Image 1: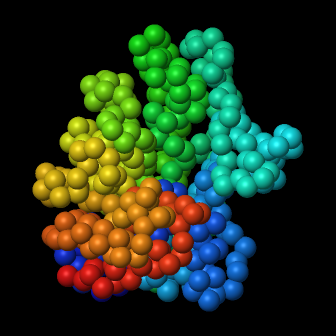
Image 2: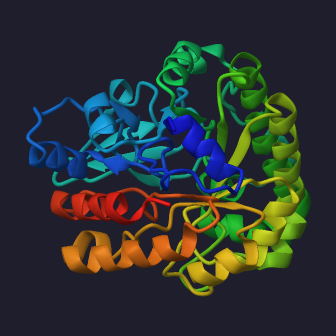
Amino acid sequence: MNSRERMLKTLLHQEPDRVPYDLASTQVTGITNGAYQKLISHLGMEKEEPRWLDIIQQVVIPSEKIFTRLKVDTRGLYPLTSHNWDVYEKLEDAGKNWSYKDEWGMIHHFPKENGQWFNLVDNPLKTVDFTSEIIQSHNWPDAADHRRIAGLRDKALEYRKQGKLVVIKGLCAGLFEMTQRIRGMENAMLDPFLYPGESDLLIGIITDLKIAFWKMALKELHDVVDVVSEADDYGSQESQLIAPDQFRTVFKPHLKRLIKEIKKAAPEAFIFFHSCGNIRPIIPDFIEIGVDILNPVHITANDMDPKQLKKDFGNDITFWGGGIETQEILPFGTPGQIKDQVKKNLDVLAPGGGFVFNTVHNIQSEVPPENIMAMWNTLEEFGTY
């Protein structure tokens, strides 16, 4: 089997020859530059200048040498967005930080000393009167700018020729997360109750921008991409950031509309959806509106036990991630602990297909390369069917 055949088989809930492995097909399944540079040194490869997948998160695009060495089955397409489009060219000196204002009007700071990633420090509509006029007159980005996908068709064709599964990421963060970035966390949590009409207008505009992007991108790429990636964060370590009923009333109708338009533009593609934390109560909602793939499978959050998730939802959705948790075990565990957790999760999630191995979110800079390879070697040893 080549990589694409292996991936498609597992996405159809059948067992391929081995569990597929993803690294860096999206901005939430990758590796940060700090961890990456240590990994390539550990593997005896020459130092590389980073190729940025997501500058804000400092997530890099691995070289083809690393993809080949680690037998990665996926390849990502990365449209130009506020997280990777001329970020360094737009930096301004802000004392102890470098400052970047993105196309949405958000301001991000990167510490000059020991900076690990950019931090969001100012929200464009946080302090304004929250009115329909203010929302509509905001300087929204041109989501359908064709420059965003320049050269991506050729890349996709190249990856298809290599026998890889092609994944494309989207315009921006999810609907709920974007309201937080635009309005600030406190406002975003209260707006649906205090200003329901204006809140719905804002969410609707973000949805419309996403749809405009996908219509533009998939008109050219629909026949060369296999997976379309969207995301939002509705869960915390303990429960949900908003009540499931609030999700269903406030966000679900817009998310349903978005997924419907994506499927219309790329009917053969699988829909990948990322949400951290405990999202168990709304997994049936995701399935209902057309989500095919759930990421990251936050196995250490409450009610996210992988064995129970596989039992309850394994026939209806593919689990992409959950191979090992990235908060404690991967950065700070021993190789033995890493092996034990990877094997345990493979035993639970792999049977019957419907599982793509990846970590629980991006590999951060404190993760030793020895631990990354312990994870990968365990996948190699126990990931066959």
